Amino acid sequence: MALSLGTDSKGKVIAVAVLGIIIVGLVFWDVNRIFFGSPSAPPSSTQTAAAAPPTSGNGSAKRIPVSLSRLDPTLHPELMAQAESIRYTGSGRNIFSMNSAPPAKIEAVKGPVRPVQHIAAAPMGPPPPPPIDLQFFGYEAHGSVRKAFLLQGANIFIASPGDIVAHRYKIVKILPFSIEVTDLLYNHTQSLPLARS
Image (cartoon, rainbow, N blue to C red):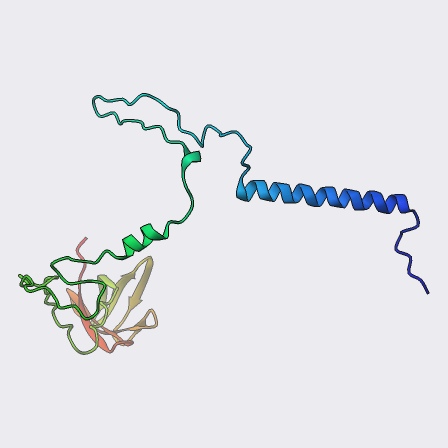
């Protein structure tokens, strides 16, 4: 069984082959021009600096004409060997050698780099309970029974001794100018003064 590769017409095969050779040649020429430059191309304005007369005056720099086409990109091993033969001859420590001695005299430290800050020690133990956020603004008395009027934000409470307010505060004692309240969450009793309006 023979495979058909579409070579029925020899003229079409020759045309495709010639077209492929032309495309490969153009790609090679373009890559060669991009990476290696074209020696026959005229120098552009970026390759040769404009030759202008040197200027001098108040703060103006001199322009020296430079032709980039005269630069030599070849390596010169004799110049590199000459640069490699230069030795460090400073009077201090050689920073490129781990075995060199430190300099003879180091300036003495005059003070700490950062000032020492003395931080007061934090008090040990549990933090104090938060203040009770009720406001005592009055009471009514019927004989020996007293009822206090308390304010918490926008809420108003009327409570007698032994009552629990806002599911957290127990009223212990109601006096004419103050009230004693226990915070049941922290087991903390606080005296609230009568608010003056």
